[in-house]
Length: 252
Image (cartoon, rainbow, N blue to C red):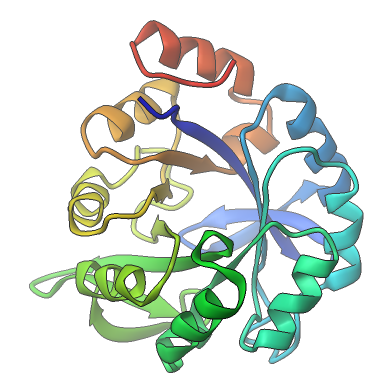
């Protein structure tokens, strides 16, 4: 049985790690380089770095900062934000990223997923899906840092992304993000059943039990969180020990 992964996320704005609720009300959470080094020491399985203003500001990801973060890591490192071309991906992979996360550009031109998977291999390509629940439509996909509703069904989009060559889906529930009320088990489970690639659950983690729930009930392959780690509410080692006691395989 494959081990479940615990992944801290660095949402970066103006060179600082930030965190909000439902993508709004951002507050400072520290220096991304220092946080990356800490998480590597504490036993994180991977690290995600998201340049959250790159797309809306129509600029490339902060390559120099990515390079500085990568120097602190000996674990897989995923970078996203403002990625829209083969050249963008090449620059990030050459500066320490192991995987890249694409979102808005893939929705604007889905063929980009095919192109990147052929060029770099599916193992390098993560498609990030930001979803919000609406009545009566259900879960729909948003772009541009959660500011634009595409009207696309979340499960259908994740399935298409996987079929086009995405090696992993990073699924964020905007409805749960920052609330600490738990992951969105319904949409996470639906996407996990719909795709044949790993699903990273994001948005809503507030307790150790929330990770147990998303692994056992929604069959996520990894759990991603930010504020609970940034502000010392839960330690990665204690979380993994809790999961191990619940019978969930993790790397200790």
